[in-house]
Image (cartoon, rainbow, N blue to C red; front, side, top):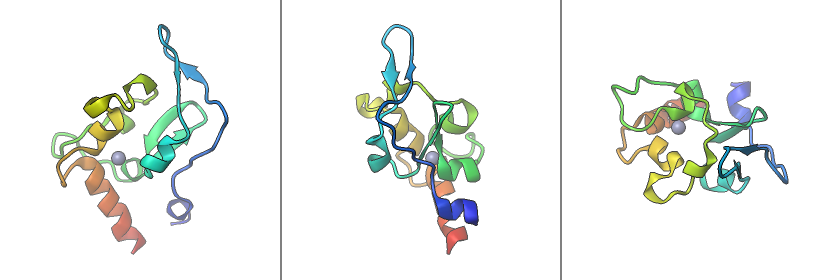
Length: 110
Ligand SMILES: [Zn+2]
């Protein structure tokens, strides 16, 4: 519960490390405002806080499992229109793995 009460780790840095070879990009701190579930590791990787705590099998729920299966740091896939990796992870369906994990987290807090 102590870990949950701390919430996602969202360190504010003036510049995050670059990733990518051809067109290097950085993590952007303003993403924390749009995606409250977003957690940033200083190993330069993004996580989904609820999904990290309550992962469910992707075969049963829609939405991308990128944030738990792969170590996401492909920043060029963020805010790429409807193909934004963060939006894809959240999924459109109310029963997506992300929304399911978020409900599990809220239920536990309550
Ligand atoms: Zn998620």
